[in-house]
Length: 506
Image (cartoon, rainbow, N blue to C red):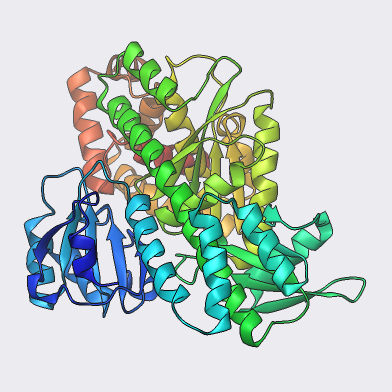
């Protein structure tokens, strides 16, 4: 399949912006990425699809295009009329074809079209493995499920086969798998220096693991194949590789549907952050997301390295107990989770158990989680999300590779502080309050007392001034001096949390 074939397909409505003389390039695959640096996750000859969420100016465009290497072309799907001019310039300079896809044509439709074309090309080849590949791919493209696909491969290999997540959850499988076996397979996948890897069961049997996607941003965000026996060879190895590619494709289809939900949640978060959210507007978006508040609703925030990794990990950890709608908010993932009969404590325990399963594959990263208290209505949604994010910030101050803080823990943070090593507490306190302590000692002032009273009164100017028996203008001067000495803003909730923790550490 060549680029020209795609541009001449009416229902795709692709528009060529750069590389008009390069349309004879052959397309050998398709992938989707929104990582700022895609170099490790794309292959030569692939058609790369992106929604441009990584774009942050001309420099980001140059870095992204440089990371694409020898791909066939870049396809931008965006709500904008055209991609940013700096991206067009970067592609033109690099000799990379840049195409745009209309907003009403989903990535999955283009991906499926490319796959069908590649299937036809593979089917024309005489080699036996390609015939098997065509049968497998046709099973998926013609409406078959992952279960049928895995069952077909298990039949050809004549061994049991499963598709699993990094937490050990079985997504589909040809037969049942014990909890102990699931845990061992997940640990093998997360810790293996090289993949495929092998796990030996208590009964002496061997199970092998194989990554679904080599382009996953982190192993904890990937799926893997597991099958009985040692690593397969020859034609059967081709069969496993093709199954992994098709599972990755099906996963990308599922994620494409989730991206639509993420856009609605993004709109809701922006509306809440603006302070202009009306109750009908909030209710309408919750209804679109199928998020019910009647039986209780909590917000969850998670950080695990890059925000994209956090979104995938949080979505996985919520399943199957309480699936929620997850999106990225700055450097962390945020989710709205209907409890649907579960308690907040049960949800927190479920999240902690799954996160500890992933701990073996974290590398240099940590997983920190914040779970809000429960609400039964949409009115307090903004404060609910803020509570979850602040709880996660507190979790990041705790010890261990995995840390979870709930809404109840936020109100009793002294227990968290007690778990922090004394040397770290002293260092944190000195960085936050050291200059204020020195200034008070030198100038006989009361900046520390002013700061503590201001925080205890939730930032109320009037109440703070009354407690300190000073004029509001005097209080204003003191708070400004505190900001100047510390380099931090008392208008920021995150900064206030830092100050409060430091004061509690005194």
